[in-house]
Length: 253
Image (cartoon, rainbow, N blue to C red; front, side, top):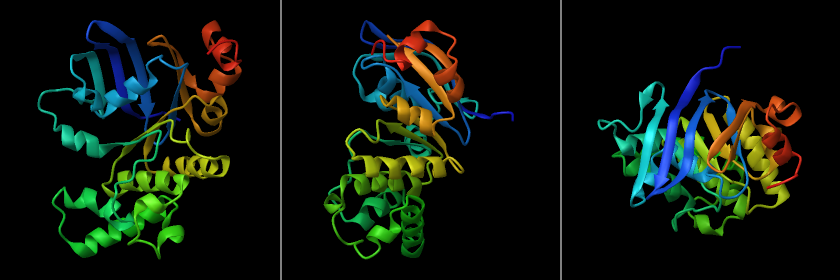
């Protein structure tokens, strides 16, 4: 099957001040696939995915060289609407971060700030997003309760629903299960597997087993360099690079 590149990273270098943290990265992220980015702490994984929706723009004295293309268009071009990029490319963080609002308002807020006023449309989007995130049956009678009262796993699925409600097309996950118990982790993994039918997903994870279970492609980062990128099965069973083999076998990292 011919894969379609949704995100394309070309000759990417990134600096915090004079410190180079990413070095000549070239990598695709394919449509309707899960791409995992693995590597030891401090190798640049989170920095890399934060570049996908321009979150590092907020860091003083940071600098990017190279290109990140979304459907062939450089998201760092001067004519790009950064707000629209962040709608199209949503992000779910390591620690669930629901707003201090009701469950319903956590989802409706993203639509309202984009100028949507039709209450019927907003309600339809909220309900459909909660269903898509596998949360509706658990919260349908609690929509006016604070999102902060949900369990950690439910909060994380609420944060995923926040991406879905504004119709993000690419969703980035930065260690989304790091603070969750095994049952909640499994629910998130099952949800990710389901979401790839309609979305392009990129996940940063320290968990080798998780990457092997849920991703289609894997990139291994080490000291800011992309050591190897391939289909996940290839990376975990027949890696081409000794560094990759040493990392996934636990010899370092």
